[in-house]
Amino acid sequence: MGCPPRRPTQYEHSLGGMMAQTPPWHSIRQRDRNVFHDDDECPIGQEIDIKYRKMGHRCRTRCPTCTKLRAPLLTSERLARLTPL
Image (cartoon, rainbow, N blue to C red; front, side):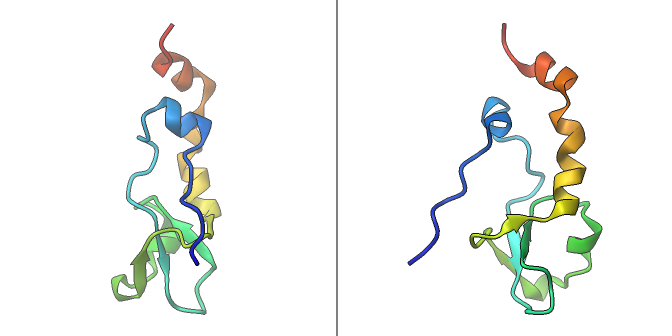
């Protein structure tokens, strides 16, 4: 029994899903945080060895650092430029 697929946010949908820099992945080690990463510039995600990474979000929340790295992409000025009139 799996979790439902993650639906794109309103902003991601309006931008055609361009928000994530990489497909979501999570760590299979118990000592790592129970979050998924989707930004290749996330220092927390970079610390996890590639052999411990598994594709998908696995019903986890997004890493707070990945979320902060995406914040400039969600500014109202940028969204206004990308939204058709």
